[in-house]
Length: 298
Image 1 (cartoon, rainbow, N blue to C red):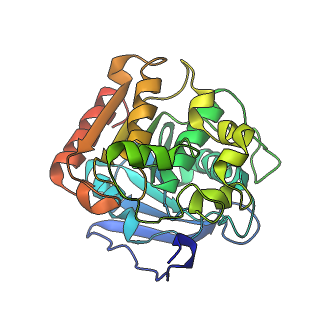
Image 2 (image 1 turned 135 degrees about the vertical axis):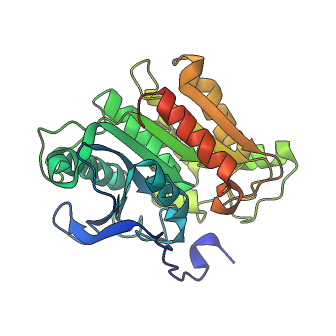
């Protein structure tokens, strides 16, 4: 069965105690343009750091506040506010519409910072799988003022930059995954990987990535890496059968060419596969918090 043919069933996130949820808030006109806000219930006088969580699903499946949000919600106990937005799936709107939507979310967050006690100077983008690709590409293009359309959405005068990225097992260079799986000795879960009917092929209007090298480069975050981009936490499992771990490892190597070593941190799970399960433990949570504190984002 192709990735794009697999059945999809929504599984909601389990909301922890001591959390206040505001649902279905519109961040711009149109379908799939709402977000949910998860806030600590404890009274607090100041502004809280913000995690904007971008779900994965190959850009083909998914919706806000699913079980994939669980790992981000664990940060609420440490004082973070978590925001889960929806965005257009690839069969609804072509790429890079999704980048414009996420940047519209960032502008909305800054515009409404006072209302929800959000710190506009401590915004972290977090994404898993294809959501990690969206998070990294959004962050690095914003740091250069590129891939932006402020007429898309509201509040065009608000900045689109973020202060950190948490990227979990994402695909970044879409035209080399078959070769990477072969080099790792891993059979991909979806044999169509690299073909026009693969999940990555949908991003290129149902064309094989190798047929459109200019678009592959345009949608590869490393194309935009620069010294002004935000620090990054990069996570992946070494036995990932959906996205080869080399995607994340190569991203980290390239990031270290433009950022200080203290601003790029990696967590590799030996034997870990695709999905949030291998990253749901207290050790990963403590590691995330420690680095965010180090970067002044706690």
